[in-house]
Image (tube, rainbow, N blue to C red):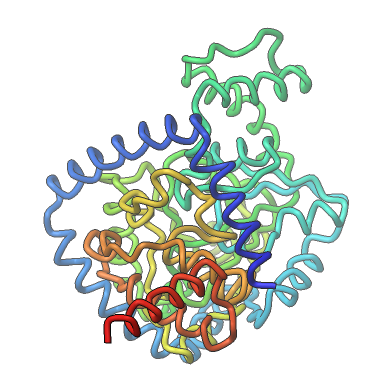
Length: 426
């Protein structure tokens, strides 16, 4: 079985990644821009490097005390008149969200890796809902019928020429435009998506978001964004649903501020256009100081805290994977990702994605080929703001795969040749 899994993975990574001229063009543009932006951001705010060391300690404590912080966060959310749920599995999370949303609804969704992990949009669509990704990159990926290929820039592998064709076809069908979009005019592409989604924000029944951090003491979610789509998804619909991995919880509001600043700085922004802080449903006390919930924003806030393999990851010694801020630096530094894009992975991407896929999405057998694709060069660790030892965890994951008989044939054959060579030298 492992050999078939490996062959299918290698075929996909070569055919759709390494052999694609479009992927090379798009990635070369993006990687160059990222490196320049990050250099500029850290040059303007050098204190971020020391703050990242603080954040490492915050994450170390938080992962060691995950259960305690989950309980405390839920208590804070409920105190703020929100509803909090703990989902141990993907299926449990989908069931909870499905019961809240129902069917026949319009749903707007901001970018969320955790929702991709459990295939939330597809699940809600199967239940008869109209679901729109509102992040521009995610929207493009949705129209293409594929999956994101970078954690920050979901459509990084799609050059502007293809984006224009995809948007032109869809927007003409919807009656938004009559003529094809200019393949070089990115401003025009953004404007037409804005025009289409504007109506969806204000007619949606439900808004769904993830979070970059969640402060346990106050129940406050932090959501970093630049487009403004997240705050519209959060603020306009009457019902807000947040799906948050339990590893995102930190002890205090101050801790969450530090986590988010380091995240956006290493994601190559001097400062993001928006940082949203949400602690509960909208409320007002303007009439005789009587607190009334459901003012201009959502009347309901539902927060689902997801485990789905995270506790197991902690118990089996992969704590460092849970420190990940999702800044995307490791992917831009990775020599394999540079020629394959998000095809280097299953649901998650890159070397660290092998760990996450093994525990949260496809399991160890299907994650094994990803672990053996990683060359363990260490560039990811050097550039990671939290100095996460991805090469070390890849070695550990390979050993776990070996114990279960999940070593690909090409690796087994090479190991046999090395053993034979050693015997001949004695």
